[in-house]
Length: 145
Image 1 (tube, rainbow, N blue to C red):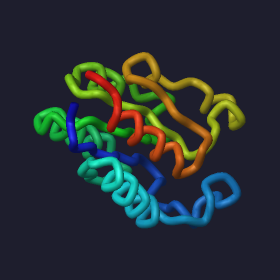
Image 2: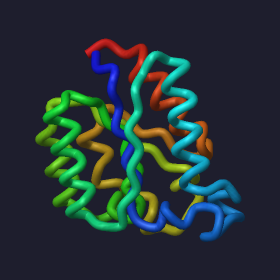
Image 3: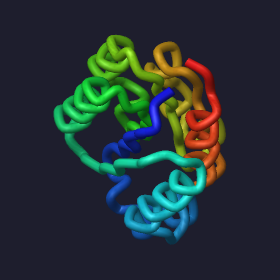
């Protein structure tokens, strides 16, 4: 079990607090990073938080996590629904990857209801706001490989 976790957030998550606050809330990406750091510390984990709108940057971070044998929490944003390139990248990793979403995708637009990542990750957690990340961190802290 790794004690390091990469928390990777994709497109538009850098605009948390501004973008559709009725769905995503008023907290910012900085608030999310601080939340993850606080939870991780309490669980004995070291967390590295990132946000990028670039698929290439996200895939490079996944490779870096894999090289460092660090598990991953991935909120791929819109890439969740169509990026088979990202799904193939995740599938090739030897570390655990948990997919998270702040909102409940099943209650959103039709295109959001399909995740191309779901078949290649350990599990998916959605709809609990920042607590989705807490649940993922808690799982990674206690899960057996």
